[in-house]
Length: 390
Image (cartoon, rainbow, N blue to C red; front, side, top):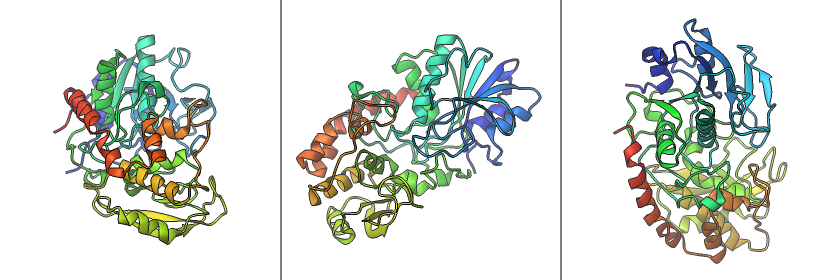
């Protein structure tokens, strides 16, 4: 039995909710029905619905822009010829002008279950805009591809709010976009006219490959479920001058730098006996971004037991080990990062200064893991009323 995503349920069974409304849709390349028809095309082709515009998040509504490549603020969709407003350019949230001819906004993005992925913050900004300008908001739910049970990491420190972290949730939150929307609306006081269209057939413990749905890249550097699995921890490499594998065919699974001895790093990491993972020594040459055209020594992260694997702890261990082995060569990345110019990128990614300070101090990995357990239990209780699936 395959999962029926929220957009399929909305268009097949609850289309009456959209009747008579001028609609806009927040979409990206992974906004597809199980048939692989794009959401925008399906709505546009339906004579009973009135789609007036599209909104594109980071990486674009149709396109495949790399990270931090700002797209045009306004353009025409090549297929429908509808206006497209970028939410990753001059503004990250819909303006009153963008919504002036819209009655209801449909949000249909495939998220990856990690706090620092910008789509859930685009959703929050859209909810805020709908609340401010009196528009309805529909969130068509989709699976959390790395399951809805596993939680990991400390809660975001409000002083470090950014476009990769707006609210006090952990790095791996174990929620769907629909569940997060319900929590944002109530717990964090957005108060928009919100309707979440639940999926049918999804269970909390399911990974994406159990859904029966086609995997379409949610962004250019998360090409596979494997890359999404390691992303909640390996994304921290973005806060350093070590390559996170962008410019290779295995982004976030490959990590390294020109000064790293691959075999020595792999041996040190494997001695930690982290759950569910093995580090294979590799050499690679990125074609763009960090160390483009230069051979890097490093490791490939091989997940052997994804249910036992702790991606955030693994990413911290990789950074901590490289820093310890190469104290003179290792460097933290400097600002700006994701529109933030004041804070260090690693602090923005970690949602606070505590984890970077622990890494700098050489805090044992298990101590770091224990440091967020109490916060996770608090979050587990807080999120419980908003969970939609068994």
